[in-house]
Image (tube, rainbow, N blue to C red; front, side, top):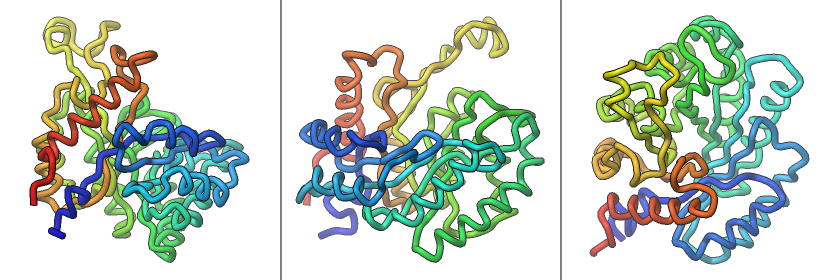
Amino acid sequence: MTKHENHRDIRIGTLVSGGSDTGNYIRRILPHGFESFSVTFWQTIGTTNLKQLAREVKEAIGDRDVVISSLGIFGNPLEDGEMDAQTRKGWEALIDNAHLFGTDIVAGFTGRLRGKPIDESIPRFKQVFGKLAKRAADKGVRLAFENCSMGGNWHAGDWNIAHNPDAWTLMFDALPARNLGLQWEPCHQRVCLIDPMPQLRKWVGRIFHVHGKDATVLWDVVREKGVGSNAEYAFHRTPGFGDSNWTDIISELRRGGFKGSIDIEGWHDPVYRDDLEMTGQVYGLNYLKQCRGGAFVP
């Protein structure tokens, strides 16, 4: 077997929601050719029994060459509300149970102090994720932060500080643990009018997991109205329908030594949605496999 493991050094998969139907959903879509799944939760794991969920997921996958790439929880673990506390407990539970799913990555938002500038959240980030990073390191787990702004900016927001490269510098300077990195995707950079490629080359060593999501920028709207009007100037896309060249992205990931998964974050494309959702996702799956180099030839 070569160092590229029959192309499995970079797998192409999709996100699935964690819950009672996860195993059945994976079983239904496996025939389309997904190679990995990222199991995600919104804000809290709720009453989910992670040990049972891991068994159900493994049973659904069976003996196929398919992996769980990561677990994710998306909330605000830096604040002190009831749901925020549940998000922190969710991070802990996923870290403790990641091995049952065969993954070493737990991902999500960093959180932030609501309504405050990013730099004011850094001490709290260091306090919360210093403990979580140590807990994760003791179990051989890496933590990855998604680069979605969730409508926030440098000066204020409700969910996440890890959406800007200057913020990444502050975060990793404050907490230089090597098991902390990024869950990166070009979509969130494009909607900020950032070229993702120079950023990818600079930060590839910190990228642990990739979300397969892209964006389309309406440059005629930007030129006519800027980004401050009520006119839509960008929207999220499934890979293969947006502006990014994923052949270049995968090439740079490989040049930078990345090994892991690109998992499609569906349910965002305004065209390939509803009854076209899985059509779009399977197109994106096959498109990304072609960008990876097509069929492996020994």
